[in-house]
Amino acid sequence: QGTTTRRYSYLDGADKMQSVDFACQLAPAPPESIEVVAKAYVTRKVTEACSGPKGSFTNEYWFDSGTNLRQSRQFLAPGLNSMFLQRVID
Image 1: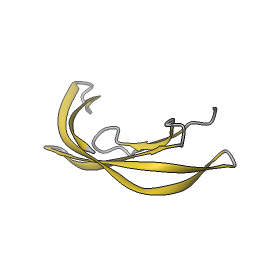
Image 2: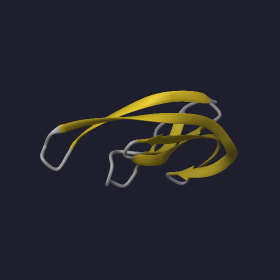
Image 3: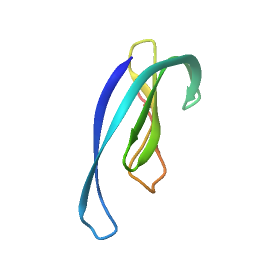
Image 4: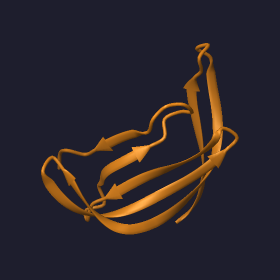
């Protein structure tokens, strides 16, 4: 739990670097079972709700019992879909 500021930098349509700050709130979510490459994991989920001048988004993080980040869905830049990552090795 807590708050943080995230700065995202990206190239705009004119290939110019843009930086935007977002105020983010971290919060625990209910545990979830996920599957990564046919293996099940019971995870501790954390959500990160962020808002700023370019809008708002929510990042999601799933940690396994060993505190490894097993899976995440993260904001990339305005106008793009989120990035989905899975840790497939132990």
